[in-house]
Image (cartoon, rainbow, N blue to C red; front, side, top):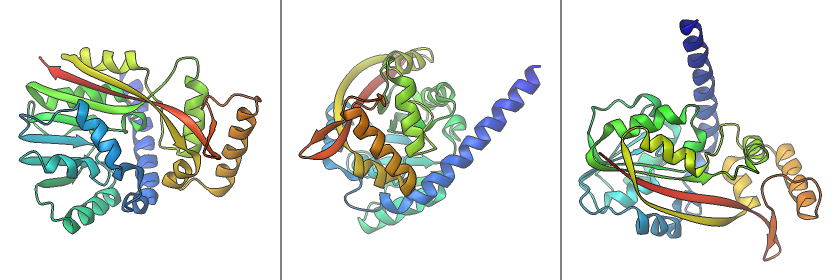
Length: 268
């Protein structure tokens, strides 16, 4: 029975990994644009106010995408290693970094659930807006803690869920981008870090209005599905069936609210 359960879990993970690669191979060109959400200097400044790079020599960014934050870290640390499941995303990142003259970021293909590094290899293990794409977040976070050196830090930035909205919110996110699995609750995220021998030291939260058009464009959501999502958000905005997205109008444009959370933990 145990073997069959493990085989089924492996098959689900393989299927999801294929979905992630397919979706982000399609999306890779959007990450090269200067107006990409992930290129936001404001976002980078918010992260750096919480995730200090002081004392960091070697950093790992898991699910690094096109290495936007790897580029930020590279200006402050000796070496950054960026790992991602999707070769097309890494190729986009390599082109970006080369064009900016960044030479101390090493990008490689790999799976966060099985990090190809020795125990205690990094001063900082960082992950930004990716945990909600992981099929097995507990396993991935265990790997992040394992590869961090004792006394080093693990920093995770991600959207988080509200229990009363969780199912509807995640359903809408998966319709927009099938590689989405689920946003964790804050307590669940902290429990995964602490359960693997890390102590939460710093946290911060932000409620962020997300522009619906930018959100859909980033993931290249197919037109018919995008139209359906817009329509359902407007029904929700007018007091109809709730989507879990908390839609609003901002400067006359349709937005919805996301809860962002940063957790920084130190490995014992």
